[in-house]
Length: 308
Image 1 (cartoon, one colour):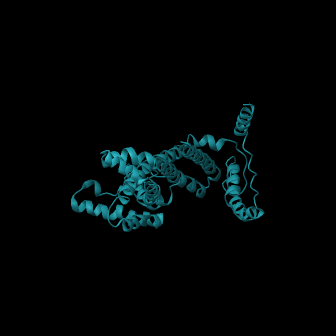
Image 2 (cartoon, rainbow, N blue to C red; image 1 turned 90 degrees about the vertical axis):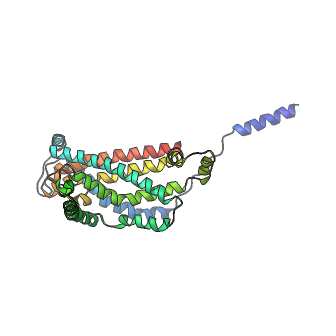
Image 3 (cartoon, rainbow, N blue to C red; image 1 turned 60 degrees about the vertical axis):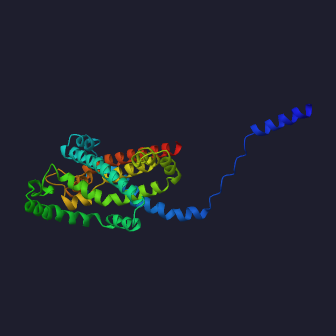
């Protein structure tokens, strides 16, 4: 009896004993040697210029010549500058609208291209073509379409609202920019959704078919929840990318009519060329902080998705 108790106590102690720590894996010096060139280039090309730019945002520098410290003057002036406020309003509105259009269309295309249809591979190749074309080239092609082809078609068919270019309308020019940006962005977003849809087990849909679920019910109650992580990734990455919109807007409207479609990036670059170096550097610093906050939001959302 005593031997049995002793054996049980020993077994209990063995189960409660903490597992031995694994020794930390030694990092090979060659790893640091291969990493060093990338770190040096990143520091010299991005970190150092960024720090210098933030420093000059507290001065009255025009980019060359003498300068003096002005403290927070540039930052205070920004929040009462209607041009900068308008650029932020347009940029965020454009980013939200484009994210919605791109993700809805890309998701529906991905669902169609992963269903049982013929020539799926060929269709995927066709839909990916816009992704490999330069944004500025796309913008110039669509500029011709909006400025010449569509007005001519409107005049021939008697459709009055098509007879004038959308790009010349300060209230509708943003629609053309959203359409062109979405046309280029949908393929990349669609590929991510295709990867997500292909990762869903087929047994789930077979079970839903046996239960009598319709295709729409399967889409809303099975597909969408299972690819929700991919939706989060596409929304956050897309929103961050559209905040930096520049080349397509330059090719379509160049910020016009007036300043109706001028993005934050265009405002910053125009200020650099116009001698407002320190002022626009303060604008760039605030924009950088916004991008960092969005990146932190992305990390928190992706981590929460992994944890769940």
